[in-house]
Length: 151
Image (tube, rainbow, N blue to C red; front, side, top):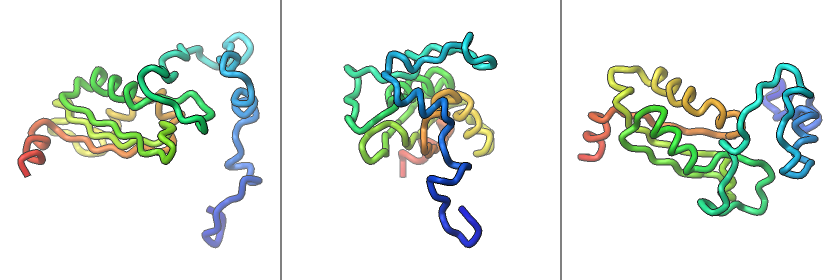
């Protein structure tokens, strides 16, 4: 926000996208992968780990980016946190996978404060959170989950 509570405009340099990122999104999907030799300091990563599988979930035609799917987010949370229950809901208006609401139940949350639990989830999804716009999470221990289900 600007002074006086007004929202910054698109002309504000603080919210303009990186020119390299903007150029990659104008290119075809095949040419979007980064070449670490051309960009020093960039670590290569497997682009298929974040890409959408069209057979698993339909992609909205308005979506412009390769973003993680609800299925991918759920699988990473189940494995990374040894979760006993995970619910992932895509809350994006066009189901474009840029906003998620998750419920995670894991024994790793026992006797941990809320902030520490959220940090565990954020660490598990570090790569995905780089392209997710909004992420709402509820983290419960198995004991808390059982109490909540009983109510």
